[in-house]
Image 1 (cartoon, rainbow over the protein chains, first blue to last red):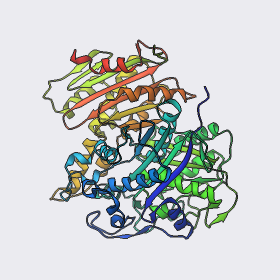
Image 2 (cartoon, chains in turn purple, orange):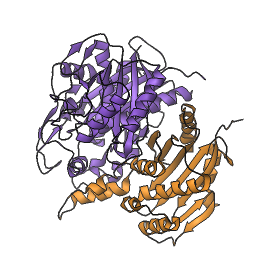
Image 3 (cartoon, each protein chain N blue to C red):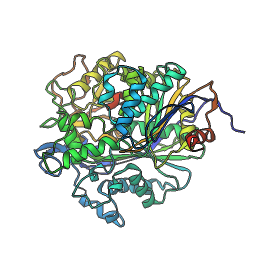
Image 4 (cartoon, rainbow over the protein chains, first blue to last red):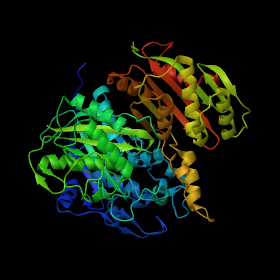
Length: 376
Length: 208
């Protein structure tokens, strides 16, 4: 049975670089990065490099702001902008998929929290956001480590194709910095004490970041629509916290996404590129196995840090703007080849006709995903 | 009349301190047994040597045991069989342990061994390693058991697969003392229809 094509027809981003996806894209073109030294004992007892949001400028825009947690307010702001811009109905025809790895986890066991502990759960957060807007459908939360954002797009696409009740979908993803998350990555010794350097030979680890990003999906190919042309997602079955040495799950994911898209060679790769030694090496191996080593490649982690449940969405949205503007975005922090297999890392803004890109992500638990997006 | 392309081949429930496979009791302990002790005893009943089990948190242990029992009952899993899971409290057991580690007054320090389990899909990674499953994984977080969502979603997932005709699905809510778990394997052929009604019946079976 032929299934409807599903298109991304709108997007929204709130990051430390600004509010609005066009604003964020322009900031990337101008070479700005959100990563900066952060010294705040509420997050960590020593200085770290991270991409942190100064949300106080925006959150007063939220109605009854005191009723919502910081992260909920950021979700609300992004959703409000997307809904207003595209006049999205809130009725039964609108599916809302929410991506987050940890939601309001910063409240859990935190003596400084002013919210009940119950609010730390993902259903409580999803309920608060649903209530704010009056969505008729409950939100569908996906929590699948660092592939959550891209996976949530794939989930929404599948539901739009198979469930006739849904006419359109919003996919929104977000995570925030908290002591919970920072202390964990720090304990893993996964953090670089300076700005991260994806795919570079001197990379030492990742920087954490926070953002909320959203896309609006439709089965109508309106002007400027981006087709979700193929998706593949496979587990490595190798290790719960380390990537596969052969890149098997990512290799299977890319192969499937490209098969479904119909032998399209992507114009560029938007890699996961966390800047941990093992992740970037694994990606280089998988890209080589897929014959993609010469395709221009970037990681956006050097601008935004690793935004966890937002990252797949945030990086997809920026890549879409790259297609629309026919401009390749450089990969910050890269100077020297640092993987056993060579990659074609983008080091400067490069104009050129672009028709498609492949977004990849990998996460704890051994999960991987690849998504092929085509212009029109 | 609803058409059921897929069927439930085998299922496992862990409710309170009782484990059943296809409705038949496999192991039971006194209802006041601490969850950790109960899961350890159930693991011993499996009579396997898998040292990684002891590093897992309660959510992973419960899912591991159920996945093992289903494979025993119905044979090895297909390599690309998708995993479609949901629960309410995500990885609460490890989340609360990690939060306690970092906020306690005396010597607050994070443990990597705990932090690695603070994601619900780690359990999917664990059973993927055990059963060599290289497949699609998704973990949903819902307020309550929702076969109305899981049944059509699993059907849609299988329709898009080229290398699998079966899936392992489940509701896996595990907190400090409660264990409310249903894992089920769906295939083209099986004893029970893969329907919302059937899954409600199985979920409520022990209360009858």
